[in-house]
Image 1 (cartoon, rainbow, N blue to C red):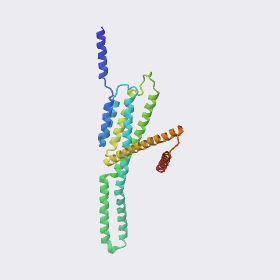
Image 2 (cartoon, rainbow, N blue to C red):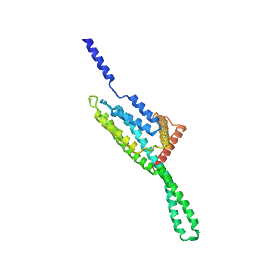
Image 3 (cartoon, one colour):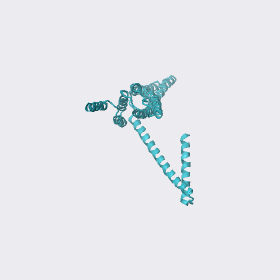
Image 4 (cartoon, one colour):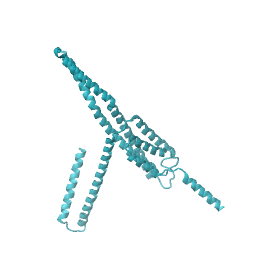
Length: 294
């Protein structure tokens, strides 16, 4: 009898282990591959695969650690997409202006030349040649503009940037909601922060929104803009780490001086020099921040 109960428990444990569960290593693998992928289409597909992994869950996830993790990665993804699409919009606007304004100028000059030619009938041939050349150049510029579609690309990237910004705001408030709920949840409370039905509905809507944005903006972000964004983000991270390191070193030096004063020891000229150096550095940082704000 005891042997049968042991077998039943072992079988139940085996079934429980065989049930589909969220694999954080798999989620991190999907996200890390997306971070290293230079192509926009592949990266978007990786993110969609990550979202589908969450929307296909049939289990109640206690505390939603995986949900918070995925939301963080999605916020990072949407922030990058919003910034790079906005930069692409500005880039294509400038490229469109290169063709737009010369075309307008040539068209205006051609019209003005035609008007002036009527007052100089003896130079009609020369005016006609000049107008023909300018009209040909204007037609060429318009044809190139229509071929490259810089204006249309700028509009598409602008709409995509705005859509990703709205999606980022939605993800941010959802992450705040989950974080606040996790803080108020008690250990005795067996309820979930996010039921399987709510999780499916939320992540399915996120998947639909990302797919719709990708469908509306089929133009790929220039690789130079993506690389510039990553370089800027890396430089900002290095600058932040350097600033934090300087702060820690300065606090340590100041703490030593305070300990000396607390112990009743007299300060040496080196200590006074250190205090002056810290004060000058603080003034310089304050002026720099004021200039950045202004």
